[in-house]
Length: 294
Image (cartoon, rainbow, N blue to C red; front, side):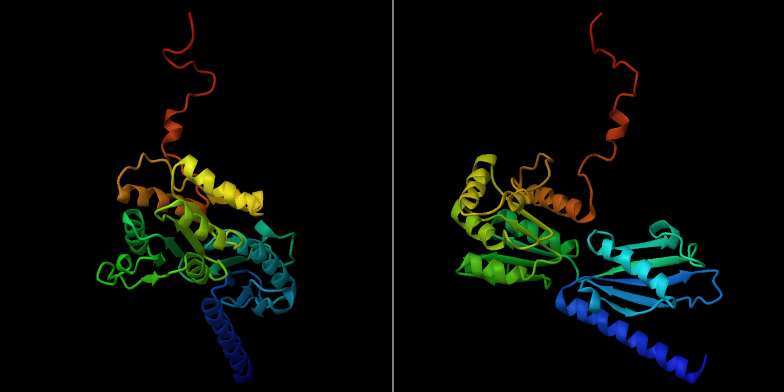
């Protein structure tokens, strides 16, 4: 490789690094595609292409060395940006129509974004347990309450738990979620009014997840109030209310576990069922013992 080629390659690498850092600063999402295997003699193994969640004109940095391959990879990466996929290797033929000399090439797709965030409205028993659990799971947590004594650093020494004492719930939660990318919100306040203020503040934001604690009656009251104030059914259907998976939770710690289980299931695309359920399903064509007449 000539000094000129080396310089160009280094410049391209630097540009991709800058693009990655910008993605993390903005709180946005990008995909880095790396050519890791190809029998094509023209292949530059290790070549990278950064695809950002931006309009097409400013979407990419770098190249994999072939314009047609780049186009196919960009089209696939744009679909991945809309999914929850984090890292996976694909052969080109798995996602694109035949691309001469590149169909068997293998591309590593890596999702670039900040660590997941959880904004918790309410620092009571459930909110406190939820903040600690999410912190242990690697989430960057923002815990909000209008009672300053509940969001005290002596109670929460964890560095990745941000504490916010907000006199105005709506302003505090709106500031915490920002553009909503990579953010989940759990509303676990002490009353209807506080729940409604928090939900109203973020209902129009494109969040990864939003849940509201309470009984069916309590959550229906809150949702109906938002419905009466022009919240669309499309938005309301995205609200998990009552919050969490049904694990029979009773204690605050168990409720926090149920909430985090649902947050993770939504993030990862899980169904939230038992992994061993298949073992208890009756086989097709067989009668279950003790069932039926005769």
